[in-house]
Every structure is written in structure tokens, then in C-alpha cells.
Length: 305
Image 1 (tube, rainbow, N blue to C red):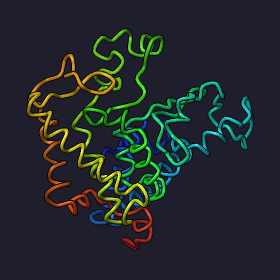
Image 2 (image 1 turned 90 degrees about the vertical axis):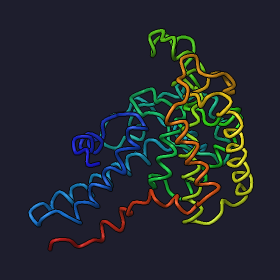
Image 3 (image 1 turned 45 degrees about the vertical axis):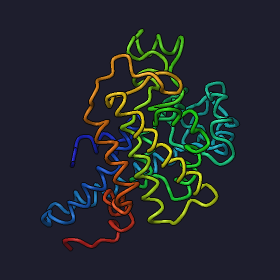
């Protein structure tokens, strides 16, 4: 849980991908929460240190990873090749590296945490697990979570399709696939970790939505549509997974085919479905099991003074 070295790496703002960052943010909060419970006075510094790094990591993710239509348009109009302490385009992102598919993907209301920030060429791919973790652990605000859920709803034909959920979007293809995967046959476009469909991911999204609703109420005009989408996805898993021997993952643009090298009777597929069943059909309030103290509440603590 503590992963002290990992926390230091994350807090040092290394340019590492979203899903690793998503794990580090709760790690920092857990570390600081445990610190205030059990550390002696001489180690109080570590508690304050962890809080400070968690704040920096949180601010860094929101500043550099969150994108919506407004931030993309702002980014496209920023100057490049700047120097000095007050540059507005810190990563020197070139306009031509911002993909046009974002227009339809985001619409006017959608938003998400992009895949990776790096100099010149960010990875704008959408990673399902990282974004769900960002919601579950309150990396993004309540309003941003609404934008994220709207994006899932808007793009349900891609992300849910016939086997929810797609692991990332869009897939690496052509030259990008050859360069980044080294002609990896397992990771062909729409396969495995390259935009394959993984039923074990659905429970993370269900948890994120239910946790939001328990804390902030309904999802406004999207509330009924998202609720319907969740239950339709549950019914789809219930119908297909037993027939297809609880396969590990599914291939193709809509997830119809069992993955080329997918294992059957896969533990995380079965457990993922059981969690979806429990959260939707048995006790939705258990979504709060993933709650962690907020950074604000941890900052307000006075310990070992």
C-alpha cells in the first residue's frame, strides 16, 4: 500500500502514463492517512511530506492530463518554441499532434484524462481504467466526473459495444502499431491491450458512477440514460460470458470475437462480473468501500503537535 519509492517517483512529476499516475494518487493519500494514525512524533514530517506531494500530484494531473473541448481549443492556439519561466505551452505541444477525432469524441460536454503527457506529442488515447480510477479516487472534480460519464455515454458504441468495456481508444494502427509494438501480433489493432474489450473493466465504471451518485446525487439529464446503459451492460455480460466460457478478453471493433489468445474461465472476468452484479443488484451503497479521506480533510488534521 505504501509504495514509498513509487510515491516519490510520482511526486517528482516524472512523465509516466495515466494509469500508473492513477494508482499513485490514492497511494499518496493512503500513506498520509496511515501516517497520521500510527507514526510517532519524530516521523510527523513524513505525514506532512506525503500530503504535500499528494497535492502536487493532484494539481499536476488536473493541469496537464485533463482535456475537454475548451482545453483542446486553447492548446491548439498556444505558441510553440517558447523559452523562460512563463511559457504557456510547457510541453511544446504542436497543433498537428492534436488528433481530429477528438472533436466528435469530446463533443461539447465530454472530458477525460489523456493517456500520457510528453514533450511535443501527448498521447491523447483514452484509457478506461485510468479514467475510472481518476473518478473513484477524486482526482477529478464532481463536475469533471459528470463530463467523464457523459463521454462514456456519448461514445458507448465504441467503449461498450457488444462487450463492455474497451480498454483504450483508438487503437494504434499502421506505422504507430509497427513502431510502438514492434509488430506485436498479440496487440494487433482492436486486440488485447490495443483496444480489445475486457469485461473485467466494467465494475470499475459501475463503482465510479454509483459512488458519484451517493455523494452528489443524480447525473442530471444523463442520469436515466447512464442507468439504462449500466443495466444493459450487465444483461449483456450475463448473456454472453457463460456461453463463451468467461473469456479473458474479446477482439474486434465491437468485441464480438473471443480474444485470439484469451484464457477461458478467467478469474478476473468472473470476479468482475460478480462485482457488477453485487453493485447493481444487491447493495449499491457498497460503492463507498473505496472512499479515502480527502486531501482537504487530511490537511486540516493536527497530529503529534
